[in-house]
Length: 591
Image (tube, rainbow, N blue to C red; front, side, top):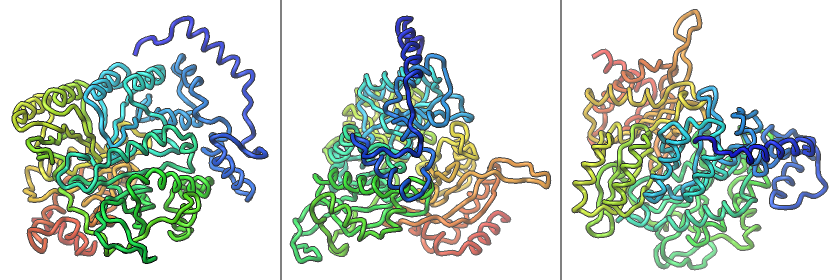
């Protein structure tokens, strides 16, 4: 982004660095202050209790204890002067500001943003494109949290990029590390004919509560919250630590205590989702007034702050507190913080959620506003160039209502397009090199960054995902959508366990000499929402070159042996045990 520091600024920063080095005193990692105070007191007290029990803090807890990441921004700017690569503890701290150093995959930073409910204005979207072009690699990725990532940011461009984002009203504060991640909500909130409630005000309220509450940072581990308003596009709220699910409560409903419950739309409270650990958020039996969602979420997070595991990163998510305590004990602790009893209801009294439309995030769909439509844009595994972003921003401005809506399906929507403007919008989308129509395979094709941009990934997931589609589409005529998720490692950013077909990256040994190539373990039968289920392992150690043919065999077996044309792939896969499925696939591949 050019030389962003003047000579005077450089001299000041260098002087600051010298002075800071002379006076900075870092307390011993295991020291115990008498009584912590201030906005980080709850976290310090939790750490102190852990130490008092004779346990050892995880390294990340020691790093937070030694220097709060929000107090390290000046050091980040100083190190940017010299293009310094961060040490592990600073790589962790910089993530509080939204910067992730992703070497050795790329010798650069990735920046993750905070976009509540995934909605941007057209001018913000175009502004991000300009920033990514000047300070990054000239492209962005849409993520499975309806978010954007900017990649290939050199160290010296890190702070200027963060500040340029702030200038256009986009923040990245707390978008990584032990914090509450981007707040997701229904992609079609406020425009969906099927929705029960508009999630935008509630997602936005929670977003601003996080930004303005220092206590909401520095948790035992990362934390996800989502709001589902009952719209046509799934929000995947059941994969979050907290899932607020809109439900209709009929007139005359009574709680288990015999107290009547006001009819209308409430949020059902689900807790503990973390599909990378093979668990969905589970119904608590509690419903929450929409206007109280932030208060309830705040109390849940505070219980997690006090009791989450700060010694073992693999067991530090909310799920494990719930597993140890049970839901009843946890909810009592939440009620104690709230100072009131939560409302409970028999699930049988709640009306079923409106059905999802698995193609609603792609193509043209009528809005609840007469004569207006949203257009779902197809992005190849979530990637778009900055030039394409500017085209889409201008289409949104001139043909739509000016909003860009990101989805958890790694694509975006342009909303508020009048019937008369649809033809122009479609033509311009196609001219940009993108599309608004797609196949049942590409509609649900999800891939994480992969080893081209993440040091943890074992395989090049985005390239292999497109190879699957390129191979299968000319050979298989599917009549309903299928979700194929590719993730590079056990962090499962692409949520492979909820895919009809889910693949997790692996290094596959191919000969007696121990030579290895990129490959996958292949799972089948995952689902979400009312069809929730964890996919089962079907094949281990499939090379990346063999995966497209193996997926083709699975899809052929499904089409030839499903019980009827309406049976979905997940139901078909669950109806057969793994040996039966492998036999069916083998027969198809021999045919």
